[in-house]
Length: 193
Image: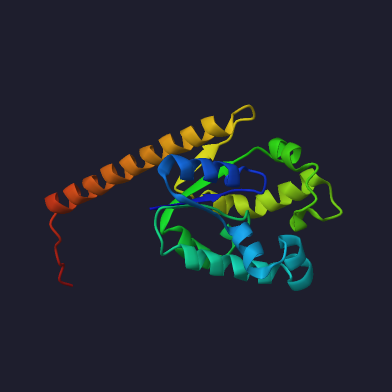
């Protein structure tokens, strides 16, 4: 089964995705890197020359090409959750949301000039808050939510992700078994009107 890491830019999806891939003996992919390699352009260039919608279409194409495979850890772009069709691909695996508090995101991204969605006249904090407000309800659809702690090392965080994934899988198995039990005990009845 694939792992899809979602969350805001600066959440650590690439770093944690690589560590998870090593732990699981999975292949690692970063959707932004694939797009840059395929187009020969940086994400900033794509945004500047073709616009955000063209970039989002490329994201969907990359996701469509990766999702049939298994044994992948995939770090996605922060806005991949915006297109409903992407959820059809994300649901082919376990979706992990790395939730990072706004103040930590600001600290991590304060000197980053490579992200086109941060190239706005408003303050970094206001811009990130706007993006988070637009996306948070979508991030909550993840199978696993990990609240990232400020002083947590990437290794400790990836260990917590592994534990949370195992727990989520056990809960899903238990829920499926309970549903099967209920279905056996309560026979289906057709009612005549």
